[in-house]
Every structure is written in C-alpha cells, then in structure tokens.
Image 1 (cartoon, rainbow, N blue to C red):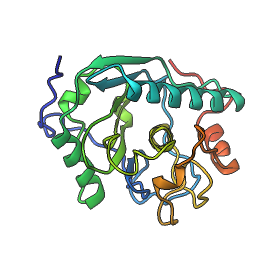
Image 2: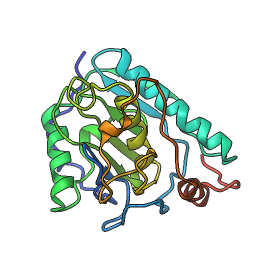
Image 3: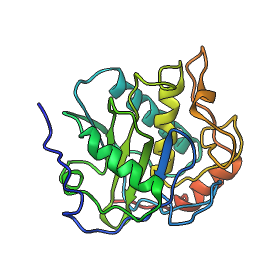
Image 4: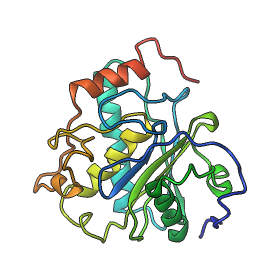
Length: 232
C-alpha cells in the first residue's frame, strides 16, 4: 500500500525553524537559523511526540527506529526528566525519494526554509521517520509551531549505512536533532558533526552499540526538558 505523498511542498505555507546539520551524510533542521554546532539547547517539544515510521515493510529498518527510540528513552529516564519519545507506529508505504532529495538539498543549500509539506502534515503522528532507498543526505526537520517533525534517512543499502552499527547511530543522531540537540566536536559521541571532522563511518563497530552523549548535551536536555516539564 503506497502512501499518497507527492511533491506539493508549497501547499502548506508554514514556517520552519531550521539550521543545517553538518555531519555527513546527515542534515538537521531542528535548530534556529545560524545555530552553531555544539551541545546548546534547542526548541523543546511541548508534548510527547508520537512516532510514525513510513516504510514499505515492517522490517529491520523499522526495528532500527524502535531500538533508537528505546535508547533515547533510556537516556531520558536516567536524566530523570519526564519527557519521553512516544509510541512507534508503523505505516506501510514510503515517502517519494524525489521529495526527500528536494528537502535535503534545500536545507544544504541554505537558500531558505522549506514549508511543512501538506502530505507530511496529513500523516498521523508527530515525528515522521522515513527510511528510504534514496541517495541523499539524511536530515531532521522540525516545525515547532505545528508540533511536527520529519526525519529522512539515506538508503540503508548505500555506504556508509552498510557498515555494521552505522545505521542505528545515524537514526539515533537524527532523533537527537529532532528533540533539540545540535552538534559537538567529540568524535567518540553520538552528536558529533561538522565543522568537526566527524563522519558516520566512525560509528562502525563489530558490536551493536549506541554512541554516548556528552555531559553538556545531557545538561542541554535538562534545560529543554526539566524535572518539572509537563507535556500534554
């Protein structure tokens, strides 16, 4: 079953708070314009975001997303913040690769902030995660006023996603952007990105593991989502 997700990216004219993520092959729109890389606070969610994975099969890619969500919820639990990522729902179909490429290229070019595409707006859930077979730079986009976000993921069959342990960390990295984190310069951590010399192939490992957060990023999460945070 295909999801009707065409290229009408100008139909819903809503502003995006954005900033380019500088890790390759990932791009982030979760920060305000010109936001510098590092463990700085971004814009928090005001409710628990429900996650919808749009893909052609409930397969290893969907399980990779579930694993990444579990990782983030463990981190948030350890921080004693009440904020969590919500339930993960699978929806058969796929976002058009051409649309994901257009969004990725527009973000990379810094020529402006894309509007919230109508077909993304109409999908159930708050955080839409779209695996693909496409050759584009993965990205995370948020439209805070609409409580909507989109993560587009480069094809799992393309380098460096084919390296062991890379895909799970790329997905977790993009979720980190979607909940408000920016980049740091420590290549041993999850959120490292350019201008530091970090690339996703550094996530490669014979052992399945998620790279850690920095102390500064944990503090940033608590600033965005303090102990008294109350979502709806």
